[in-house]
Length: 288
Image (cartoon, rainbow, N blue to C red):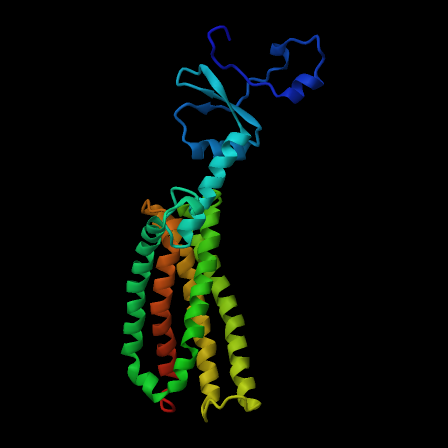
C-alpha cells in the first residue's frame, strides 16, 4: 500500500490469465506467504518447500516490504545444510570450508574427536569379549562368527537411524511418534533378523554337508545359535537405531551428529553379550 506495507502477492500466472482491463485489487485473494527479516535461513528453506513458491516477500515486524527472496537464493542454503548433515552422520564435525580448501590439521581436528570416542567405546567390546573368554576357549568356533554378528547389528542400526533422522528432518516424525516407531521397528527387526538368521543357518549347514568346513559334531546347535543370535541382535540394532535419534532430539542434541557413533558403540558391545548369552544357553552341556 502507500505506506509500504505488504497486503498481498499476486503470481505472474494470475496476471497473465486475467483480462488486461481488470485492476490488481480485483484479482487479489488476500492470501500470501511471507518471510520475516528475523527468520533463520533454515526457516526460509522450509517455507519454500512447504508452499512450493518461486519467490517470497520479506517484511519487518511492522509488515513493511523490504525485499524478495527467490528459490535460487535458498538452494545454496539447502545444499550447505545437507552437506553438514551428511558429514555429521559420518562421525565428522561439519567442515567450515570446502574439502579442497580445508587445511590438513583442520581435517584432523574435525575427524579425531569422534574417532577417539568410538575407539574408547570399542574398548567395551574388548572387555565384553574378555568376559566371555572361557566360552571362547571352550568353543573357538564361536569366534569365527563374531565379525558377522557385530556387523549385522551395526548395519541394521545404521539403516534404522538413517531412516528416522531423515524422517525427522522432513518433519514426518516427532517425539510423540516414538511408540509407533518402536512397534514398527521391533517388527521390522524381527523380520530382518529371521531373514539373516536363516541365511546364516543355511550357510553353516551347506558348508558342513559339502565338507567345505568342519564345524564339529555339534554343528547343528551352532547353526541354531547363529540363527537366534542374529534375530536378537538385528532386532536390538534396529530398535536402538530408531530410538536413539528420537531421544537425542528430545534432549536438544543434533541426532545427525551423535546417532551413528552411539548406535555403533552400543550395538557392538550389547551384540556380543546377546551372542554369547544365547550360545551359553543353546550349547550348554555340549561345547560349553
